[in-house]
Image 1 (spheres, helix red, strand yellow):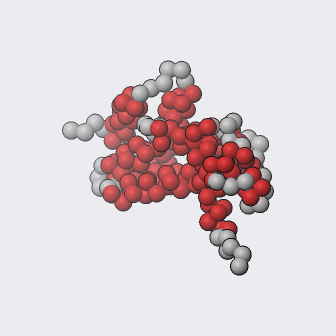
Image 2 (cartoon, one colour):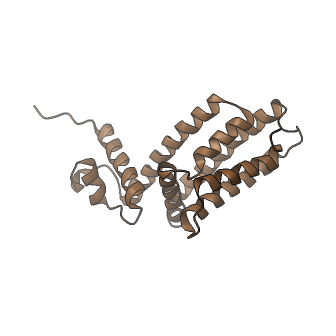
Image 3 (cartoon, rainbow, N blue to C red):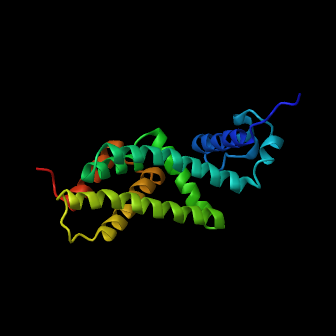
Length: 199
């Protein structure tokens, strides 16, 4: 009797393997052969599930987003207002190996979005989701009295996104890489500018 293959499960195994390969080897070192080997299958088995390498990379980036999303959702549920915003932003910064790897994946999406329509659409979707995620604790902060009702939440969110993007890119790409402690100090100072220093 022929073995029954769970095709969806195998497809997810390939996507996870691609995510791990990009995280450890970088985009340049991510080949179809390397991903297939990590997943424990042949290259022929892998290409059966994906149209091309770009599709596999895009899905690996989506997988990365799922991991980050779960942790940020947990942060939002554990607290609210400024505390929730702080926890979400801590998860977003490249403070350790895992989060730095996710940043490398995000930068890979930026690079690919210049020439790949699907990747560009995914990048835009991620930014819309990120914007809404940051708006939530700001709205909670207004309700809790941590921020004044007249605050321009949209402007603050856009400024904060630019700030986090700048820290992430500088940390990964600059020769003068900041330590995790320095990143946290800058984050706290930025939030103090919005909320005022804790008493």
